[in-house]
Image (cartoon, rainbow, N blue to C red):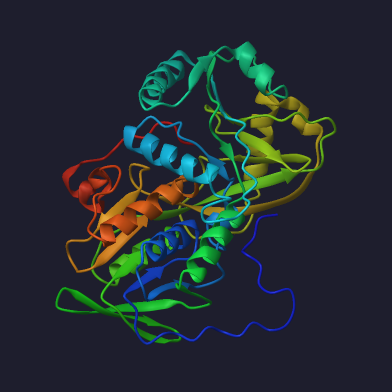
Length: 397
C-alpha cells in the first residue's frame, strides 16, 4: 500500500534544526517540492530549505496511481509529459534511484464517435511532438489488455512510450540527491504565515520558528490556496477526493498497459501480482476528505461489470484515498506572482502532477534563476482566470 517515505529502521529520529535564514524556502515535500529542491541544488543554489508538514511524499504523491505519460490533448501538457518521461527513463543515473519504471504504454478505451474524434486530434498533436501514439481497433485493445471486454467500444488510443512507476521512489531519489547537494529538507514543520515588507517577502513563519528568506516556492498541492493567501496571491486550487484499491494476486496475469475506460474513468495497471484499480466519482464533493467513501465501491463495481467483468471475482487487499488538486480548467498553475516578490508556484495539476514532476522541477529552477525554460509556461500563470484564458485539457480522468 502507498505511503510516505520511511524513516530510519530503528531508534528515534532527531529533528533537523530550523535554519535562521535561507535563499529559498520550498513549501511542500511531494514530488514537486523534492524535484525543485534537487534541480535548484544541482544548479548550484545554496541555502535551500524545504518544509513539509508531515513526511516527504505523504500527501497526494504517495496516493497517486503512478502513471507517467505524454498522452494529452494540449501541446503544453504533451511537452511537460514528454520531458518528464525522458527524466524517468534516466532516473537510475540522475538523480540515482530505482523507480520500478514499466513502459508498458497507456491505453484509452473509447466508447463514442466523439471520443474517437477527440483522441484522433490529440494523437496528431502527440505525433507532431515525436510521440509514437496511435489509434487502434477494439480488437487490438483487447489483445493488449486481455481482461477487458471490447463490447461497445468504438475504438482505442495507445501510447506505447508511456507507463507507470513508484511515486515514493521518485520522491526518495530526488530528496536523497537534494540532500547530498546541500539542500535542507525538514519534515513535521507547518508553515503558519509568510512575512512581507511592502511587496517583498522577508520570512516564513512556522510552528517551529521563523526562517528569513526573500523567496518562497509554493508546491503545497491541495493546500496551496492557503499558502498563496498568506501573501495575497490567489491560487484557485480545490481538493477533491480520489480513491484506489489493490486486488489480490491474479494467477497468470499478463503484463498490460495502464488502461483507462474513458467514459467511466475506470482504470487499472499491474501492481505486484495483482492490479491497482481506480475511478473518479462524479458525486464527489470538494473538500479535504481522506476517509473511504461507502458509495464509491458500488460505482466502481458497476464500471468493472461493463468493461472488465472478470475482476468481479477478484478480492481486494488494500486501498486508500488521496486528494486531487483541481483548478477550474484542470490545468496546472505554474509561474511567479506579480503581487509580491518573490513568490513562485507550481500547483493545481488536477491529477497529472506526479507525471510532470521532473519537467516542472526544471522549469521552476529556470524561473528562479531568470533563465528561459525549455517550454513557454506563461499560459499556465494563475492570472489566466481573470481574463477567461482557460485551457482545455481533454485527456484526463
